[in-house]
Image (cartoon, rainbow, N blue to C red; front, side, top):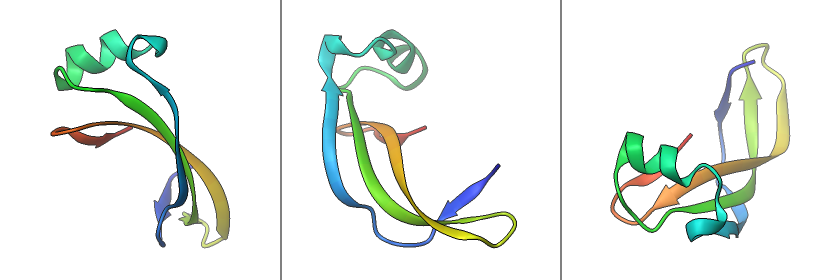
Length: 69
């Protein structure tokens, strides 16, 4: 189900970085070299059916490349 982040992402924490991430090679291949980190945070999202929920989001980020996935 698709969703849209409708508010600010809060409580952001790094949960993995560097060689500790299994997906690092794929990130480098698709987006380029960088100091990749996996982060998590909470934000309100709106689903396609109009429901709004506070959820925990996970994403990857690298300086100079930005957020991905």
